[in-house]
View 1: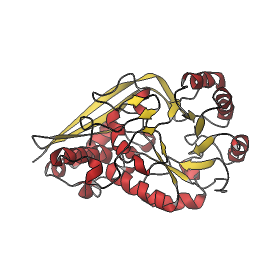
View 2 (view 1 turned 90 degrees about the horizontal axis):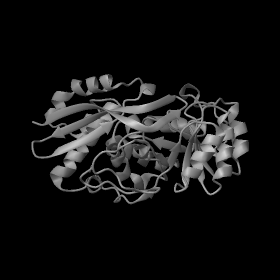
View 3 (view 1 turned 180 degrees about the vertical axis):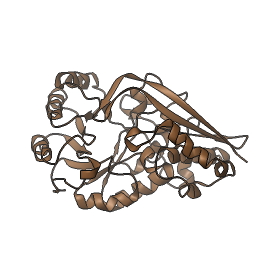
Length: 328
């Protein structure tokens, strides 16, 4: 029999983090530990209100299947016992971490994916005035890829200000559902010749297919809130999306992220390895899958005032794979 431990934790943001869905000064996470008495596997999730989750509901989901977790459920069996979301993510990642510790082999070897390597991560700039975002972009000189959060079409002015302040940088424009279909031709026209890698989740999820469906246009459109599982991929491709942002808390853990990223690549999508704001423990499983990703957006710990012990090592924009002491 295994033991199961759940812990709610709060981690302060370094300043304030503002996106189109709101702003936060601290995040609330759920930490899962599964132990066989000798080894302990850990996983972390961030319950997200946008998807109807709270720490209380996530813990309730896990408690509901506690007996089968304690009996030694496999990662494959877990997929049918919890739905895609934060709860399954934390348990799934804890089980993989435990499996790695028990076997003495890293997770990447256990699941036969390429050995993870250091990658360049994007760095996120919160919504602010054009002048303030330009200033923040100059302060983030060590980051060659900047993700700009915008809150509607007025955010285009901030994008142009950042392009002027950092002509050396590549940009990811993240609208978090804040644009309308009529805004898209204007945004594309203004950024057509700019070093913009993609426009992320421009439309609300219930209007996801109202894109200017010209997939060869530039910048390309990336699905975030509209992508949770592999079942979403065909409709997104048909709607004109050519990139997807895969997050553990959306798809429900390492097991599904691996499958989802493989499927997206096989269809021709560009893949971004993304995250909610969280500690290094939340980023580590996705770093193990970084060979599937065209872009890395795993800057969550950089946005916190502090990180977990044995956290990921960031060298400017370079993020290194996790050590066994952290995860996997």
